[in-house]
Length: 593
Ligand SMILES: Nc1ncnc2c1ncn2[C@@H]1O[C@H](COP(=O)(O)OP(=O)(O)OP(=O)(O)O)[C@@H](O)[C@H]1O
Image (cartoon, rainbow, N blue to C red; front, side, top):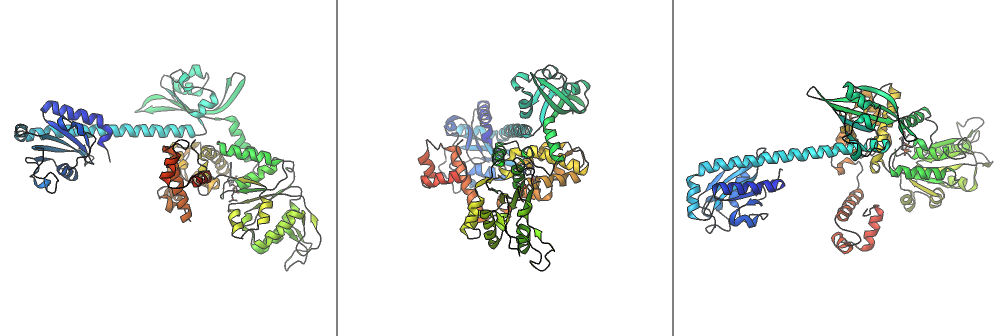
């Protein structure tokens, strides 16, 4: 609901102006009966709620004007504490209507008989006058609302433009720079306060933005090289004219770094070999993971990668393998959850001929033997049956395998990387996973963060997956529109990067070029965004609900109180002990900064 309080200064001025013009006191209340403007002896009560205010409440409820000749004795005063003893001698009340709803009341009030006579005699003209004043207030509110909306939209647009992994430069009709996003500032080393208002042709000579302003037409994709001191910056740029009501208003240039496009292209060319450069992401979390991948590549230690499905666990495992000395040896991945239990044992350890009915003549080597000198990824290790866990542990300890039905021990030199989306520590406590195997696998733990906690990576990934889909589908999508990006940034991506990749491929299939828009957003995402959190998450347990509430309460208190100064207040508000507070902060990785 629109609030008169948001234009309190104007309301006070209007009250004063009416009072000066009519020489009668004025009181203006909002939808909650709080005085926003008042004059004379009630001026001191601005900001306070009308304690009784039965008549104002009636006007607010019905949206009908009212004239009260005998306050305290009128039927609307029935039940009021001041019934029969009201100070007011009369009142003329007019609603402030905003989009058909009463959001306040302007009252002309008197406290003596002489003034009462005046307003009762002139009631019709006075009502007319204050209803004009009420319209003025509602016009002001509409303008304020529009102004707030515009500010919000501008803020949203700035945020979107600063989060895209693409440079954006804008110039007006005279070719002067009016805007450059964070990417353009960082990669072209331009400081907004130095370049805004300057001719683009002098700041970036040869730029296609200047060309678009000159020709007032679209400039298609071009490769441009800028020199910055000794450095060269290669860009793929394009520029579009901006028109309004058929008039040329300026132009926008968007660009990508050629270096990034080449990285993406080379990743697409070598799907099989995944290295560090193939792990895409713009944020610090992915940078930390890549640092860890780099360190682990040369180490022989076992690694346990945990993270939700589709976060890139296999990609990390491949990059660890590819970065180390085993890179020319095999990388073999076994999904322990996808292979039927009876087959998993023979898949992993192999068998000799005649080991069981249907066993192949000559036997078959298992994945351990096939991965000799290389790396074996045991994906979804949490799904491995407990009896096979014992056998796996033996192989890891002895570094030898025995095929099913065989008697020979075959030495194997395999680096083990295990991955799972399940909580193995909890499984150990529930005796669903062997503790000794857990410790043997978890020598170096690596946790891959879900996509919703590293949304800063989304713009680059969108770009990459669009390029990938373009190649697969032989299309030429240029990118996605800002509204779609905003939606992608607010969605929680339960299926993580895999879900993002599949969503983009789906949209590229059904959307018309040149850009992806909200029109082709899958129904599933639309529904999720329109459903409250609890319903949104399939399998949303009571524990999840408690965690979400705890996290929200902690975040709220931390935003209002200082951990170092107001610790007692924080403990009081949350009603927990100091130890619990610190444990929870650690658990939810919260800190004041
Ligand atoms: N940082 C990243 N940059 C580029 N592509 C990524 C990234 N992370 C994941 N992907 C892509 O997302 C998809 C899913 O990744 P991956 O299979 O490695 O996930 P996972 O965690 O092993 O999934 P699951 O647990 O379901 O096996 C793959 O196509 C992968 O190439």
